[in-house]
Image (cartoon, rainbow, N blue to C red; front, side, top):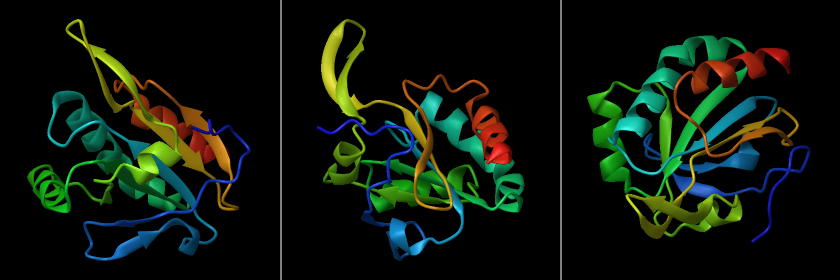
Length: 155
């Protein structure tokens, strides 16, 4: 699995989105993109992270950026999650793990002493030229959205 690095071109992908379209990364021009990969809809950490991004969404948009969440949950699950917390941005569904693997965020995790494969909470900030500006891996959700937003303001 290729490990993406800062300054790399971000790999293109197409995934179904909660706005009923197929989202394609390369179609977004001249905007910064916050792509956050999270393990599961409506679980404690993912909910905090998503709500924090949602709270900052208007400011993020004003800074020429958009937020997208990606997990392997179905669109149906995403729609429920989005509605429940009134999330202001779209979620993308990667049930086949194709983008999750392409971005190198599928890996071994340990929970309560059990090892299993899952999504490693990671955020990519992609600049308006389609290059990876910054990567946060093994994200701690507390204050994460704010940290990402502060970075967006610097681009």
